[in-house]
Length: 158
Image (cartoon, rainbow, N blue to C red; front, top):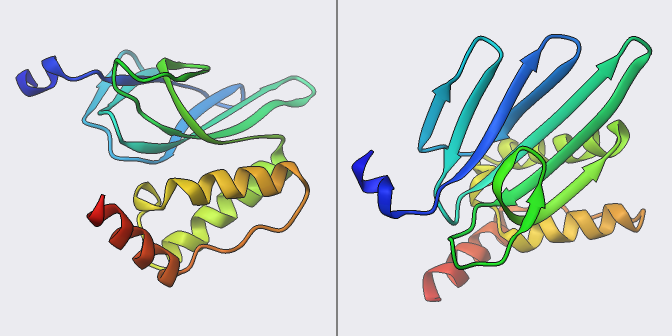
């Protein structure tokens, strides 16, 4: 933990009140997971970490919020967008609202995992591409093993 003191940490507040409020991390590699009480916990990510954060809420009449954010944790000097329940915020790679779109993103994540690729390691441009295509109502290019290998080579060079 002492090594983390000099690093800007991004903290996500997760809440679980069954059938009312459910916030969870779909993927990501937190450096700290702290349980606050039986309904709340904090997960922390170092700069550069990518994670998928899902928020769902309902009332007596049904779902009122269904949202997925794919976020890159940022360093203290980097600009960032605000994301609910994420402090201080992060670089938003993808945000979709509404169950039909959230379901499509979850299916895309499942497809990536089916290739034995950790969604945290996916090229950030793919998440941006998926966000833009879904926002425009267009089909997105699937993430393939070849695209991933090309991304890993580009990342190694820079």
